[in-house]
Length: 635
Image 1 (cartoon, one colour):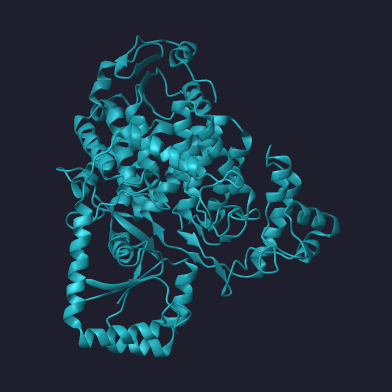
Image 2: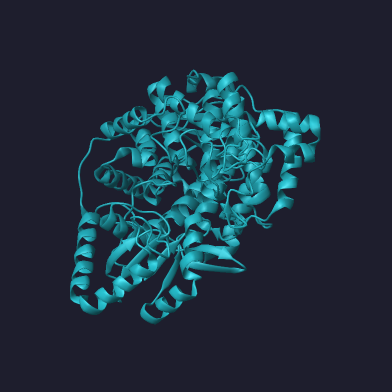
């Protein structure tokens, strides 16, 4: 019996307490089964394979994930959460164990055949191919989001609602290319609604994993590093696209939360904070009106309660999740700057820390940490603040010191020990982080590192015949089948992130092998997409592919490129690649990007722009460059 869990998942904790810590069940399991407990973050490859099994058998999935299989890994029964005893329509775990034991004893041949049939069906499903028109896929994705957009509360579909920031990033890019105000409005309204609800922690900042209702008031209270990293990027891009200040301010609050709560002393990033406190979900985050008055005093306490709609009636099991839903609906969200409320929140945050402990998942994962590095690098590129560059660089240094072994990446680090051979998402997200760092700082060493790991990623994971990246490396432990997973979930898939890496590297370097791999990868992705809205990160990459690219080479007489960085900060130019060459990096760039040798370093700065594979005459000052770029009007 195999059980896959998330360390901060509420129902994983419940089942662990009800069943695996229960003496009766433990004795029955130990006597009749070989039990294997898997951490989903440590082994996403195992989770992917057996989540497919669960979806195939039950039509549903999620965590905790319970799989029963034969000794040779052939699954024959699957489910998610089971209570100890049968309840309504849900079988009890103890009853299930007894039934499986009896079936194994009396009908083993049938179970084994069932396992073989399931395995065969999954392998066939994995190899199915189709064809699709890229433009049609992109339009279908936007159409779906438009159709299911919640016009009243924002977001998409009904509760539960997940942030899925990569969908919002796709909408921003779609709005840019097609001048579509509707796409921009969907993204903006959703980002505002996410902030105003209880899914955002207004006291300590940061976002919870998802909302259990349609208005984003009541979250599932666990906070995941990857959500906060991706939401930081989404808010930053929306700020750059619209110039509306509050998107920047929200991004800054998220990064403040990560720095305060999820950053290890030497630069690594912890995975998550738990949903439960003292065995009760959300207890850490809620308040009663009298608490604020006691801590802040009568006047400030009443102001705090009114600001965050904290009442005697409560909005969550008699207590209150601080939120701004009513206030924002009445007056809009012009700015979130409020020095008085910020000061009061700091006091309530300090008080909250004294009330109870909140469990932290202190694993440091290469993949999730890379997304946070990418977010900080993005923040430096868009906001220009050195502190964000420093955090991104510290994150890379941590990975290089603790999560690499030879030329390979490891999966996780905890308590001084690194474990696990890196999976596709580790390489894809790390390469992406390095690229974002290069695009913000123009330090060629980051580009060199991105190229290095991209080539290793291609060697270990890429299907050179049909395209697509396998989830685990060619020399890794063999599982039931070797999956290629293209569908985005709470995070973009490793395949979609790898596509972006190959695309950017091909444009930056002109490397023919990168371009060939990118084309094969995009062909594979377009063929396997049968539900475009679940592949929005891929659709973002495809948007870049079917629209004209722009490549800029800046040859600078010094390292001072502040004016160029200012242009790139002030304007949303999602698909322009930039290379900066100067006397110091000339040799390294020539090795990485041979065509840069043709651009001489002269006595004055020069800017060479190519658009849609056509190059224009160089210009020699920043004003001429602005004219050449034809900076688009903000929508």
